[in-house]
Length: 270
Image (cartoon, rainbow, N blue to C red):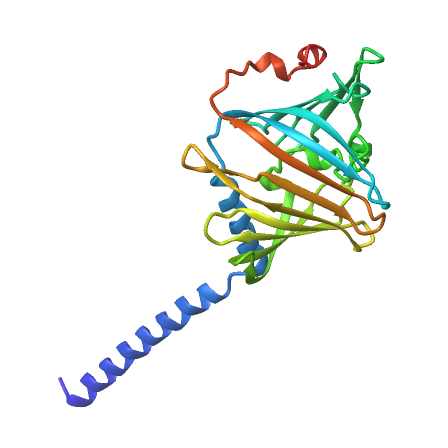
């Protein structure tokens, strides 16, 4: 075997190794913003799986453009879905004019979500149609759509960049609803890289104008895994109105029955 043949074989081997490295590097850098965005959303979703159910108390504070405030107290119950979307029940405890009003939500993985509102004054259950889910929830800056748990495959995603937020490093993620009846064209969220908690969300209307911003803070961890915020502040930049939700008394160990999350159970909600 000649020296020339050995050199040529060695050169070919080096070339193959280099090409493998190039291709490997190329495959890493070829991940699209859409693929990376989906992975971020998937990771955030998976980190919150397995909580089972929980109950919490909530104070909703409405503020108008002139700064006048009014408050409502609610009880929130959430039941995790295993092969389907989560179910939630929001019950108004005060003031008297809304006491007993309750919203039942059945989220679904891919098909349209279902929502029903119980109005005690009329003693009847009203179904919220998909075409009306962009409407204000009880006069707040949150919509009926905002009251539904986010199911992963109901959105398409795009990674925008990484930047600092709240003294943390955050991934900036754009989410676009697949549902044509959504009241949003897209949303942009800031999610921390450590625990994948959402700190800020910008909402864009169907004309792609940024009209609302949600700020969350004071996260607390439960059962060594599940993070929940104490405060959620939604500001409408067009109307000058805002709504804050203050959460307290989270309970992940309370007893909860499935029949509470039915239309029949909705009428008996307390």
